[in-house]
Structures are given as C-alpha cells and as structure tokens.
Image 1 (cartoon, helix red, strand yellow):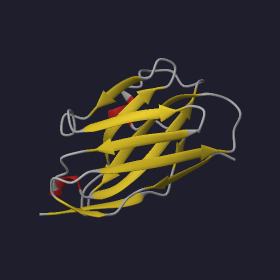
Image 2 (cartoon, helix red, strand yellow):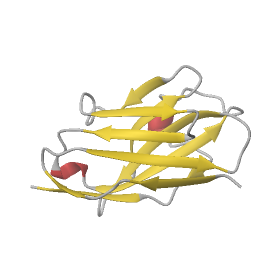
Image 3 (tube, helix red, strand yellow):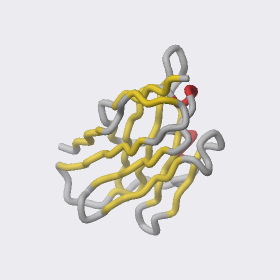
Image 4 (cartoon, one colour):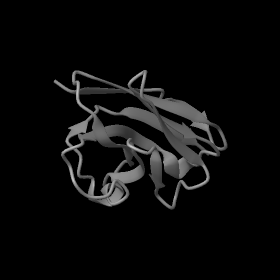
Length: 129
C-alpha cells in the first residue's frame, strides 16, 4: 500500500523559510509525477509545484515561482519543497501527491488537474505577518 508522509510544517514569520519533506513507501514501481498542493482556510486546494521524476523537470504555480523549489531524492524516496521569502498568503495545509508511470498526460498539466493517485495527510504551514 502506497503511503506518503509529509513533515516540516510549522509557524514562521513572514520572510522566513521552511523545508517540507514527503517520504513515500509501500511500492516497488516508479512514480511518473509527484507534487505539492496546498489548501488555505476557506479556499479550494491549489497546485504549488510538480516534478516529472523521469527527468526531474519541474513546474510551479505563478504565485511561488522564484521562491519555492521542488526536488526529489530518489535514493531516499523523499520529495522536498524548499520555501523562501514566505508570505502570509502561503499559509495552509500542504499535501504531497504522487502518481505511477501508467498515467499519461503532462506533469505540468497535473498542477491544475490534480490528477494524482496517492495523497498524503498534509502538514500545516502558518506564516504570520
């Protein structure tokens, strides 16, 4: 059974930095695309960043470009999201997601479609002004 477990969320002041981690386990096949999503209070979930694991190609929401970096350590089965220059509007629950290689379609398009097979439980990020 595939499991995704996020960690690293905490409360930080505006301008601060955080690194989120997502450890995946329970499968032996390859994941085609992995990503980070977030949901702010009272708002719908939105895509933050995705990574095509075959080439480590990355895709970002306009709101986080230049401030966030998604990466994947294949040996450690860990997905990261490094966040810099955090803003109060970055506050929310951050979710890790993954889908196996049988999925078709662009990993970049998945940022909007949220077409993923597996989701973590989320980790809370709070940015105070």
